[in-house]
Length: 444
Image (cartoon, rainbow, N blue to C red; front, top):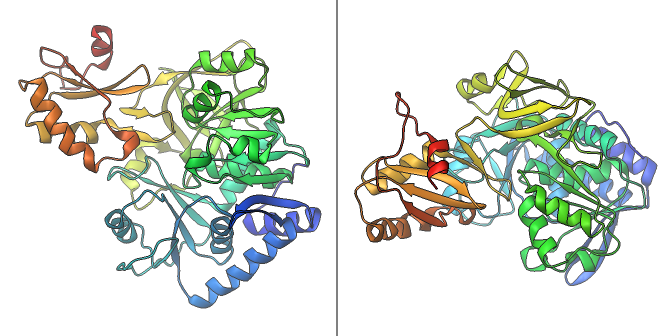
């Protein structure tokens, strides 16, 4: 059952009325399998929203550990009129403190410790902020809303509907838009049951434990499940998103009878804008609430009144660079086939999207590496799904390795350099100094 909801409050009311005692969430709590019905979830959200209103805060940072209480907190904070900032559980105390001040957070959920809080906001109702690239200083906060996220769930549900008797397994981080929309809201919008994964140490056995019929995965997790044959017999549908996926992996999955769909979208569009609903997972149909065009150079442009971000938080300069007259300039390159289906060809931006869906902004990362190495002869590329540092300076391999060993201690694990290539000459550059990455890749 696909329901179009106006906002999160509307979703809560409608799903409680229509689904009542049907299971909304199944999870493990205190070692036991626990079910929370739609009526129970709605009641918990409304009660928590009332308590949050009484506290008088205006902007809450939520450390998004995957669990029922966290989901209640997100919905409740939205209903209470608070601005919500979605924070990764991997953040250090110093990183949280930095984001508290940058995002105007005046209360925190999900992390103990002493923090100095900001003074809050006066215009944050319905806003939900997600970060574009994990926890680096280059992260930009994308201003979405409960309304845009709910609309995005409806948008995807029209292209790939779920049945009432489906069990959607959520294993993805809630602080990523793909994880929140396609791991939680998609299931709630269709009135089915959402199974909440039990954490990293259970990534290999949650499929057998919950017996899902549908699962949303990023390519890295999809590859992990595929290599170890972890897909349960109950599974009828896999949705892959958050980053580019090796077509060979999808082909291998289909060879063993798995039904795989691939979604394309960005944090800036509240998740998916196109999805494959046919035999070719690389050929995607544009979602009903989106309009996709191509610029003269093939850049993908997206317009979506329902799902588009408001902008980057307190960053009008970068907002204006990508969002012009309501059209998002994605930095991705694409083409349409003769049936009007979208194919992704690559990226224009100086950015790498990792297999887990997080992003690395190359200029900032490379400058940090160059400062540590004492020159600006460091370039990053992806080779065989590994992050590689290509070095064209005068240091020896041993010196580079020693410096990287120190620098990588402060870098998120998924962003760490996995290989070093000594180029033997200066990096190839354009006349204005930009690195010619395609020449580096040809040389490698």
